[in-house]
Image (cartoon, rainbow, N blue to C red; front, side, top):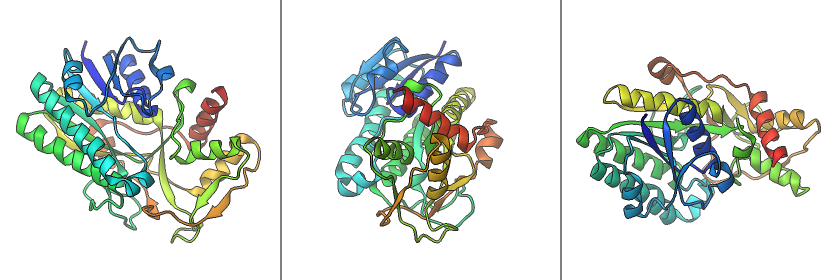
Length: 318
């Protein structure tokens, strides 16, 4: 049975990935500093948990003992914060990836799946963004993800570490209510947080060059995303591979459409208010999933309704 180290495994996405790995027959070691990760996601669900920071190289080297592969999700991820405090993001995201690769190199671990982001792409008007499209990130967060991808590719090719970077689009939903999204930066939990506080949810920017003036994003159910990691890991095991894949639903939903679906799920008008656009937001970002479907045999399955319904079920249960 292969043992997989999941950095950031107590996070929203990480816990879902770790759960799918267990289902697929892998043994899992969670590595998390619990700055954003939650104990309730992992305690009692996983037996092997290491509390550690990815900036602690010695701790990472110890955690790498007996490990066959790594899925690397640990990172700071708030776009707005990265604009205000880029140093924190470069140090943590790029420095952490460097430490991880050093630990893998030392321990002879030859397989990694990396959690990258659609934030690496330059803004463009295409109906669907392909992996070969230009990458000039708008935010320091996106820049740290692209730098980490480059590090992994360079070291991977030099040391024969089989590697795949998955460029996530917007992740939503929950397959296990206790694993729900606690991020204050993602649209859906942000809406729930506002409603809980008796406030109106915000729509940032209404004069984008889109059909209804609000930003369009590709939303993917977290369970579909978790299964993409399992597919990517299997690919790194079968062969030496050096690849990048988009992971999205291939569908674009505007902020207004999201708000309407949330209203439908909750059975009441959530009555959002309009605010000025934020720095670093591109008007439209939709994934082309042709490459991952063809090469990894992975396909997203969840509808927007299923994504929002499962988000609300998680929110209600917590």
